[in-house]
Image (cartoon, rainbow, N blue to C red; front, side, top):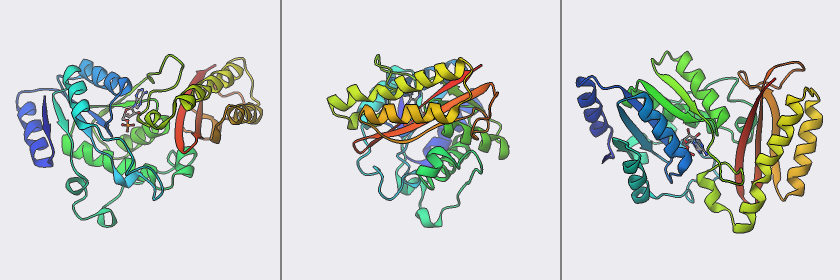
Length: 282
Ligand code: AMP
């Protein structure tokens, strides 16, 4: 597996693969790879001849008081994992390579509506940062297919919408969330948790499942389900951010009788913010 750090080298690799008629998949990540990321690489391998993974801790998607500096950077270990997973090229640019004129001078991509609630409300500018860097990666690589995790459900909705709205000829594929045995969704941010917090953390998925069962049983009392779950999370040691039941496609608050529902949740354990979600068809 090759690692390149510049857009020029990335493009040369893409050109050589294209000239051989290869189908290309892109897996964008921020690194510190775990089994969730590797599941995306495996899915990408099933869908294309050549997999390109990017590792870029994108400063544009972090708020001023978020964990940009603390975010784990483990390039050597990530390279080993990608090599073992059959990834062909790792693109690991610097911030200067991606934003040579700085963030203040960068053209941005704003995706209305789906970006606005949930994490969009709690993390202003976050999805604009995600949409901008994903658009840039789509233009740099011009992949046939791009693979993302359902773990970041709202992010996936934002990317699906920008792909449609900006007419990218790219298939966007979602991969189900890979979890620990406890149910905790694998996440680079789990590394911030103490042993005790890791035990507590499984309450997030547990409460999603409890809420999902109520929805599946036909309850439309969304406010009650959310309040109960929020109280249970607080009792388990979390500081809940949101626990919202939305329409799976629009991400607007669910209406009674709707059949495709997703519960989106975010909560802090100490200073670590965890997100998770559960979809219900009824
Ligand atoms: P990140 O490095 O956190 O930006 O994530 C890169 C990609 O991996 C995104 O598409 C995430 O949704 C996906 N991802 C992260 N965690 C998981 C997981 N536990 N299961 C499946 N996909 C994941």
